[in-house]
Length: 157
Image 1 (cartoon, rainbow, N blue to C red):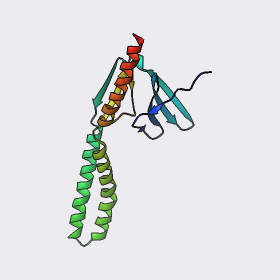
Image 2: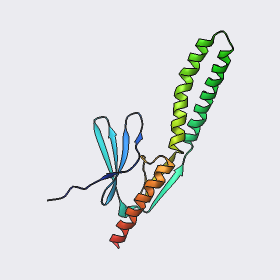
Image 3: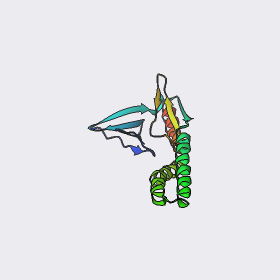
Image 4: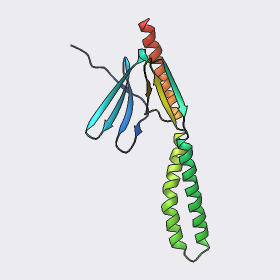
């Protein structure tokens, strides 16, 4: 009788409009689960096959910070100018509708830190680890993965 492999969920989760991706540490493998409506896909990456792991910083979070910062600044200026005009309620409502959600996104991005792309390289492919999309998280998880890769490759020799 075979025993079931125990998996430990790694920090992080990538999501887009239709799917979620998460990474799980197994005894001998890293498992990426892609959840789509009505199905799940599983990609296995064995520790003994990993040759390199690299983290590439991206400019996605910086761009979002700039756009949200400009919207918040524009909303703030519109609100300040509304105080001195006769059309105060309409400008303040407009400024609040644009400014408050942008401020929340701005604060969220500041707290999450810079974005990145993380890749595991084997002898035959480069595999993107989508769930590790923030530098701080990717570095923390890379250290966990590094220990497992070293242990698996040492057992192989």
